[in-house]
Image (cartoon, rainbow, N blue to C red; front, side):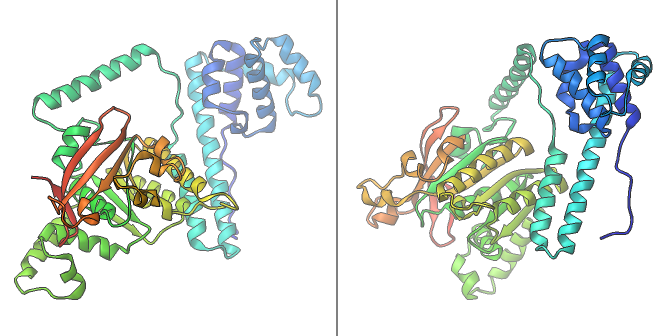
Length: 442
């Protein structure tokens, strides 16, 4: 442990100012209650007095001098404050409720500093006690990410909401009139028909793309990630199944039109070298980040939150795939509950970080027993709450996988089974077996 000690962050003067301001002008108690909790005060006596004030407020009572005096009598010997101290607080309180609220925010900042310091000391202890560095870093990173992203929400008046929504509608309408295919708050997938039909991948939304093994889920995610990154949006691709090198080779194969197998077997031609070099040069300019063979969900989420802090331009996170991820402390819980936690937290993460999350998933084997092998929403119902949590659910289905004599052997069906905006139906895509990649159906 470090020999250096630091005084806990505090602002006692601001705490006294807040308490005095609340007792002098009770009209701002409600707003301060949205900012502070008793535990945010440093001195125990201030915690108790604030708790009393808030308790009175919630009981629809005004904490007058009489009530405060009774509280102090009941707390005699337990608090380091008395009637004289409270009078001094009121006399030295801020001149207006605006200043009281400003000082409440100062108290909150000091509380967050103490919480951060405690977490850092906890991490120091864990390191000294030989805990696995990855676990300590993940736990600390998750806390820091939550602290940085914290932004208390409040009720909004319908006039504020309607003004904001009208502006969004106007921007979207204007974009469509000028030939745009996606909404201003969405990210283009790079697939024309999907973007026209759905408007793209919306920030703060969870999109699930599911299918049986062999349908091309990973290849589809690779294509979307490459397209989005090329358009200048930051992208993170997390694979719990394949190493990063294999993922990037798929992207390289799609970019160069060189069969994927040649990269693995080394059967390239001299004429391929310039194309590969040019493609790699283009990728160098993209904000594209990879994380492979990581299955601990708490660690993945912490790393995504940290990446967003380091690269604010991060707009899309693709995760391959839900059923492979493991939840810490799962105990005897069923696998479907673990997947449910992943999907619920993926949605929460999308909203907190203002990103789009593309979560891949497998559907159950019941598909194989049916004559029509196209997956349905019901095929996800053993996979936690994927169906409920997702804003969009799409299924991938390749007819050629089950019937080699199909009319269009390279067609893949992108079937939208759920959309909160009501856009449903099938969109055809082109699947290239040689480069294991997707493109628009022509």
